Image (cartoon, rainbow, N blue to C red):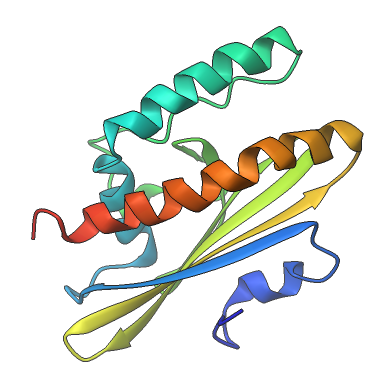
Amino acid sequence: MEIPSSARIKQWLENAYFADNVTHYTINKGQTAMQVWLEMVNRTPSWIDRFMMIRNRLATLFGLKNVGLFSDIIVAKQACDYLTGDRVGIFYVFFNNEKEVILEDKDKHLDIKLSLFLQPEGDLLKLYVTTVVHVKNRLGKVCMFLAAPVHKKILPASLAQLDAMD
């Protein structure tokens, strides 16, 4: 997996049940990691939110939590206003600086961390999006069995939207 050595997400890779990393280039506008994340979720393809609605309905039938939608953000809230513990889409802010934002969702079954790390390369910005999941029990393994294939479709589709309107 290609992850910069200065990315904080690396410390959670050990013993991960699932880890995934996607890289993507976008235009370097001097934006922060949180600004890129917010831009991405603001442009979430509608099929992803529809999928999350179905996921949430099914999850509640099995006693799992409704995590909301990727696009569940406060549009008027600026990237610099997000603090540790604030909700942003389906995640909570775990760590946030200019180069990296780590978002988290955890419950009694899973501990999920998603990092968006920025590496400027002149006029371009190389994005490293890393997902790390630690499973806590059998139900967590079942959840990951179902979620992993969808995750591999959602992330590239969301990243592709970053440049769709530039």
